[in-house]
Image (tube, rainbow over all chains, first blue to last red; front, side, top):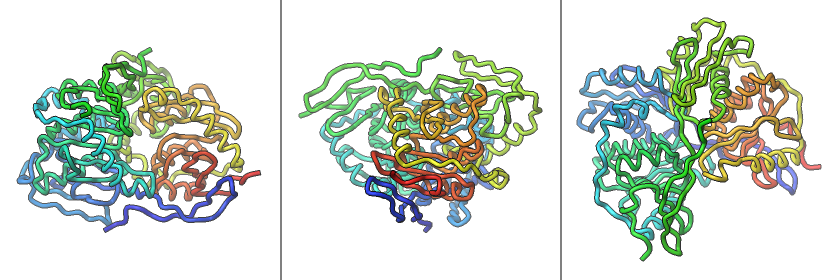
Amino acid sequence: MVSEVERVPILRLTEAGKSTTDDVVVREFPLTIILNNQELVTLLCSPKNLDYLAVGFLSSERLLKSKDEIKKIMVDDRRGVARVETEESNKQADEFLFKRLITSGCGRGASFYSAADVDGQVKVESQVRISALDIFELVREFQHRSQIFRTTGGVHSAALCDTKSILVFSEDIGRHNAIDKIFGECILKDIPTDDRIIVTSGRVSSEILLKAAKRNIPLLISKSAPTDLGVKLANDLGVTLIGFVRGKRMNVYSNDWRVASHG
Amino acid sequence: MVSEVERVPILRLTEAGKSTTDDVVVREFPLTIILNNQELVTLLCSPKNLDYLAVGFLSSERLLKSKDEIKKIMVDDRRGVARVETEESNKQADEFLFKRLITSGCGRGASFYSAADVDGQVKVESQVRISALDIFELVREFQHRSQIFRTTGGVHSAALCDTKSILVFSEDIGRHNAIDKIFGECILKDIPTDDRIIVTSGRVSSEILLKAAKRNIPLLISKSAPTDLGVKLANDLGVTLIGFVRGKRMNVYSNDWRVASHG
């Protein structure tokens, strides 16, 4: 296993003066995903659970529907390559490559700006509800779990939860990757995501919202801010979007009927 | 001009109970960049200074070298399209499209993983120095300027500075975009970047470091964490990388000879 952090020498300056010391920084690792011998993408990620990341990414991009389709996964964590072989042909992969070719970018806009992608998305109908107190408790537990962030300040965290506890937890330098790793683990371990909750440390843009909606997630909770398109999609797709959960405060941006107030 | 923020209705829950109110969220705007009639990329960005973003992006990707090459810039901020016409042929744009095709991703890894791109990068030789007190003062001023973040919590800021003051400032939902907007403005307004300093609110990954090195920036200052590849590139390319500038503390990760300690 490749380490997720690295120790580097630094000069630290404080009011007391300067000192030479070591600091722990987060690693940035290029992972190339190859689907049926076709090179799809290179992600910059944290070098842990690369199989989850590859499977979660393919699922988010609709290039993989279920675990049953997977014939083989080979991760070479020295060369930074994940090879996935599936039963399916690569017709969709060709479409993916064409789509990214014109719409990729920092925000991974590819998914969203294919109108068919959003239009084809089924609304989340889950009737699950959660109390405000349970949300505060989940986020408190979530922060407690964020190990690498506390060491390096350089990663995002994500978690799959039910209304009472964290079921799956991940960290990555990319907020998209952290969520893809969650869903990849769910697929490979047959963990259902219906009626479940995603908690994220990162901002909720349209792509993050769509990732959750694709897995039929009814509640998306963030410690940070949403964007206007994130809020719009949450309204349209039936997702309860909660932001700025800090201490005993939160903002509910959409479908607030799933949140019971105090008491 | 399209607004950078939008007001949305929310349910706010606090210990005192719940209330229906409005919240201001940051806008997420798709901008498609077209170079000489060839569609290159769609960025998710904040809808301000889209001409700076288009020019800065093209420059960062080495598709544009100087202002003189630009024949025309047309920004349609309703349709979200920036068309740039240059004297150059599109040979490099074809290479860009091919490169992205295999390496694009959330981290915009494209630039870095082309080995030729890093190998071809000249080391930053600037002899500029700055005192620790001036760094603290610059970052204090930088935080003061970050307007949209204070309203929405949803954007990154970047600034071009000399050792005493902020010269160019920008905000964007993407940390890459915020820096590209700075460089785009510098190109269009003939503002030199040699011997200048970049301050950013965001994490310093390899791509951010490379963006600065390409513009010959000797000092990169962040309020956040660097990655290991960011530190490695900073060492290799002669950039002084400073992170975690908070209050009266900072970490200098590379080329610390440019930083004078207190006094």
